Length: 125
Image (cartoon, helix red, strand yellow):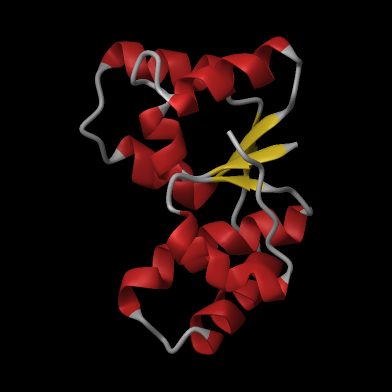
């Protein structure tokens, strides 16, 4: 299973982008693609057109609910990273990937790399 960050999913709609190629490669390989409820909400905030939404729905195999376990991990990440408000959503997305034991695909590695010591792993596009 590969956990998709919001920005990776958004960039996946840019024809010919590395994210687009990776999504298609993983889909062809029958890789399970997952997105957390938080990342899905962020994606749905758009801007978003109907073809992009339909593509996302067809690509995503699993939607991961935000659980109390995820909340505990996210709170720990938030506190460990200096309680930076701009990282709040990233903490919740990283927590879901960590809890599921899934590597994350993100176009925002700089912000997510700070969570490696807490168990976050990455998949390269």
